[in-house]
Image (cartoon, rainbow, N blue to C red; front, side, top):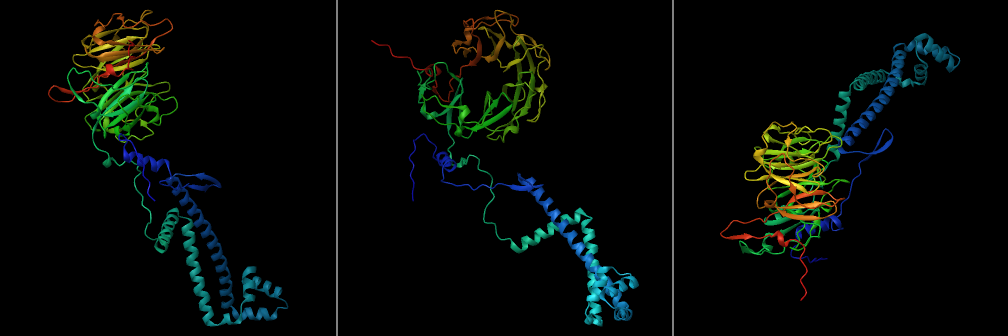
Length: 534
């Protein structure tokens, strides 16, 4: 039988095939349940526990078997000892038996005259006359000698756990030698998503992520090359309250790390991000990752390779900072791994990719900011808690972290729609762990700080409120002011509304070349306006 499945040109054939393996009966998996009785109770055990309990069971079997064999050997040796005594005094034994009127009288006489037990006396009375020959005597002596050796060995075995384990090994080796044959199945490394990367071409794609958590990738070839200043093409159709917050060009074999507020990190290969058309909204990220209930993504980091020259710097709501070498995240599972251990009530709020030499600014809700060199934060393992990045006072908490860049400014935005830009030179570099300095006045007019960001003169800023209102303003339109100032109004916020998010609008990625570039014009990514009727 031959099955033909037609797919669209954008679909990855090998991924479709692997999905058929996973979700249909094209391939069948026979599971094994490691169910065993442990102390009389049925339990499902992992492999290590299964082996431990099997060895424990074999020990008990050998102990019980050896105790039974010892008791049996001792009982037989006891009888043989009586027979040997009788053979050593055969004339007296015969005379006593002939003089006895009944078997009971003969038994009692043997017991009293020769100090025998009732079992030994019965064995002597039951003994055939042929056992009185010299050859039979030799057989009895030989059997008795072997029994003494067996008894000594069994006692030694029962008194030594090492000898019991050695016997288990010996018996298993004997079973293997007698019954084993060539393995008919193969033990191979798990294929995970069953993706054979060699079948996936290495090509550049444009990856877009929206503010409300939709992601897609588009082949770079979908964007025709234009001269600089061209109008561009439609890059995405979004919902009215959504916008593209992150955009970058990545190879299909690159990685995208997703960090969550619970301190975990997940990753996807770029080829694992569903490909979509230019105007498609994309796929919800929560449908691609196995997030826990209530877990929210707080940062995206694209990675080409996990090298030792780069680090991930993290900061939590309670002011903890942590730096971990990028190579520690090379083996992220689909179910996620720990990126940072968190105290109860703490959350991961920001993650930045660094080269180990950057300076960072941590901003707090109550308008404080501290600038420090990342060298002040030592490299730690993934499961570490980190060190104090900023000392928080009262109910203050960290809102974000920004990387100091030459020629850029620090944007600070408050919940009542006010904000300002400040040059980084206004923030002196200090040691981590301090309270920092005032970056903006927090008062009734401004409200608390919502976010801080590194911006450049040609950047555009998107500000979102809790009621879903979005405003787009150029960074150049926000005044540059000193630290200890109130800022200017960025947007009008309603009485029962407040700013909840700030994003730097993703800029177009340009290719190298003379007077040409790949255009991904975000002005065209907004929902198209209705044409005016004549």
